[in-house]
Length: 324
Image (cartoon, rainbow, N blue to C red):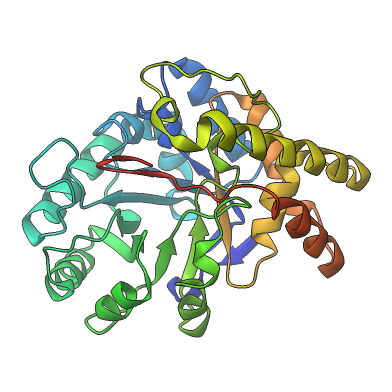
């Protein structure tokens, strides 16, 4: 597994991170034992970077990750990079909450669920417009000083929000959504991240399933799956983008890779992107994604991929308050 230095955090991480959003209950029912085996298989194949969040089932995803990596955490803690996120409280009257008290509560809860002594990378899950950046950034620095977290990042922030945070303490990483059907970060904030050496780990490089090649135009989703309420997975939007995916499949076949690998490799070839976060519920599914780190793309191939995708519909993703 190829590795990279995650921007100014200095963390040495695998270019593919194992993400656990799908293990928190937002994607419907799943086999927990199979998910544990998928996490363990990713580690066997060289993944050392694992991303979760307080909001993924409010501890469910974190606890499952901790369970899966328990023996590895005992044996080789310093070579594992555990990232989690906090600062949200879905269902409350303040769904985005990056106040000092809630962040501290979140860190303590995450440490308990993961059963670890420190978090390698703690990220503010969504910007909180009602809390000054000074409070959020200084609160996280206090937790660094106490040894409870080692590095500080944010997720879903734009350039102005990154700059406000940076004025108090450096933002070390950013976790934004990024895939062939969602490219807004190329304008803002990816240029800022490149300029300031902020490590970028992108989520949903497969478009939450759109770019796997497995979805059909008549796809339906369980009531517990957020995609059942998302416009990206309904009607003409879904049909148009799946037509694009069929064309990308042919391109991938000529490259000798799968369409999933092609989509992930495209994100990893974009300047300023260090890591792609992918999830899996079964061990066999993670192997295909990890192969993307070895797919080489020329500038002409990248241009052709983007020409094909230009006929699709740019979509939005999930938020703590609902979905687009």
